[in-house]
Length: 231
Image 1 (tube, rainbow, N blue to C red):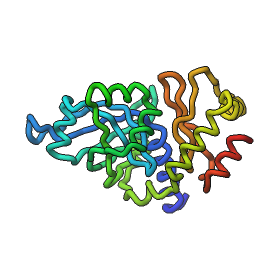
Image 2 (cartoon, rainbow, N blue to C red):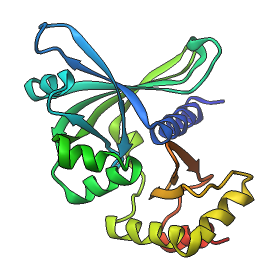
Image 3 (cartoon, helix red, strand yellow):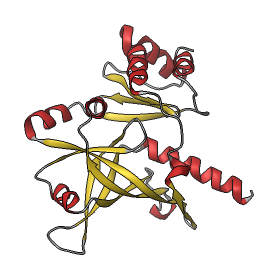
Image 4 (cartoon, rainbow, N blue to C red):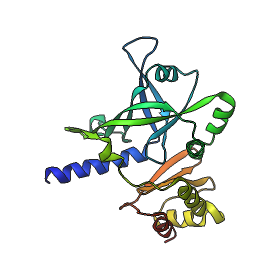
């Protein structure tokens, strides 16, 4: 395998891990103990441009840290039970910023329904990470830096189009989603909903579990996306 194709394979593996991860270790700069990193395990989802969203309490230590210094990192790991040095893992250096976008809020609510109450009643706030650089380890002895443009350059659907696509997938008793999952021998339950769609795949929620369904090739437009979903 030549160097170019190896790099392309790493990019595809990185994107896969980036999109299928729904929690990560956020490291911030401690405001209380200067110079020390502070780690927090948090639920995340991606916004319409592929940037991580997280809803955090105004009382949390990591929120205070981010308000003092927005520089942070997010670490994601591939699920596994063997030697951890064989796991794929990804560190994203980023800047955090508060988000007041209603569209971003609604997207986060779809992934984490309880967060609506946290936001409305408990003063949790939505933050977005603006990625700066990626460091990807695909396994033992395979590691390199990637520029953001190599990872977040895929096409995303307009917000209104995604909302309509999700409605079409979830409407009419979830018949479209049921058929799509059945073809892939995946289980459908009464608590299954499509919650996010982009050119590289579909995100679904089953009760408390989030799952990513990857496409073999990127989808160029919403009409093609729905035609594939409907078979």
